[in-house]
Image (cartoon, rainbow, N blue to C red):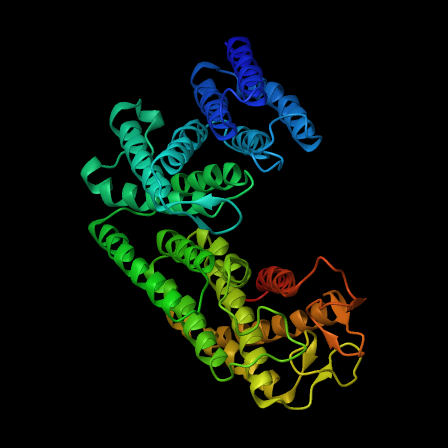
Length: 480
C-alpha cells in the first residue's frame, strides 16, 4: 500500500511539474492539485498501514529529498520565481505527527486532511472567485478564500465526527449538537492561521494548530459554547476598532485575534483580561507622544504588526495551551506578560519624559529611545507595569497562593525588562550615521556599529521573554 501511494504521488509530481513548465497549467493550479494528492495520501496512509514506524522510515528520506530539491530550485517555483517551500514543509509537519502521536491516529489523519482539502479550497476560491485581496505576511489572501477554508473545515470536522469510526472522532464521546459552536470556532481559528501563512509556511502552521486544538480539547459545556460564540462578534469589533485607531496593522489585528482565540480556547476567558490590559495600557502610553525619536526603532509609535503582537503575546499564548496541566504554568504566563508590559511601559515612559539615558552595558550616555538605553523614569515605569500585571494575574489564579506570588511575578517581569535592555545593548543591530549618531534603524549611508544585522527589536523581545519565563519556571521548582 505504501508503494502504491508513493508511486501515485511521484507520478502526480512529475505530471504537475511537466504541465507547469510547459505552461499547460497555471503554477498555482498545478501546485494545488499536487498538494491535494500528496497531502491526501499522507492523511489516508495511517488508516491502512498498521506499523507507523515503517511509515516514519519511508517519510524521513522523502522529506529530506524534498527539502533538498526545493532548496536547490529543482522543484516547483512560484509565478514570481520564488521557491515553493510548501511542498517540502508539509512532510516536516507530517513527520512530527507520526513521531509523537503514533498511538493516536486521529491526531495524524485529521490535521493532514484539513491541510489537504481546506487549504486547497481556499486557494481555488481565492483564485477564481475573489475580487479583492490583502497582503498580510507576504502572500495574497482574500476573504473569499478564508470563507471557503472555514466552511470546508467545518464540513470536514463534522463528517469525521458523524461518519468516521469512533477512534477517528475529533471530539470523542461528545454529543454533536453540543459541538457545533466549538467546530465553528476551530474552523475560524484555523482559517485565520492559514491567512497568516506565506511562502508555504501555512503547511506547517495549519496542521500544528489543528493538532493542538484537537489534542487539548477543553471541557465542552453550554457555558464554553456561549463564550466561544460571543468571541466571534467581539473579534470583528476589535479588528474594526484597532484598524480605525491605527493601533494595529491588518496583519497585527489578525494575529491579535488568533492569540486571543487561542487563550480563550485553552486557558479560559478570564485570562484574556491581562492581555487586554497590556494592549490597552500600551496603546494609551504610546499616544502620550506621537513623534518618533531619532534613535528609536522605525516601528516605534507606528501601528503594531504581527511580529510585534507575536513577540509580546506569543509566549503567553503558548503557555496557555498547557496551563491546565500545572499550576505553576499560570504563574509563568503572568511572568511572560509582566516582562512584555514592563518593557513596553519602560520604553514609552522613558521616551515621554526624555530623561537622562544610559547604555546599560557600556555605562555611558545614550540617545533617548535607543535599545539598551535605560533611564530612571523608564525603569520605574517598567517596575509599575510588571507590578500591575502581577496583581491582575494573582486575582485570576485558580488556587489563590500567598501574596508573595505578586512579588515574584513583579521581580521576574522587571528582571526580564532589564534582560531585554542588556540583549538590546549587546546583540541588537545598531547603526551609525555619517554624522556619528546611533540608531536602531538603518538609514542611507549608515553603517553597522555593533550587534547582528539580523537581530532587531522584535527578536530581542521574544528572546528576553523566553529566557525570563524559562528561568522563572526553573526557579519555581524550588519554591514552596
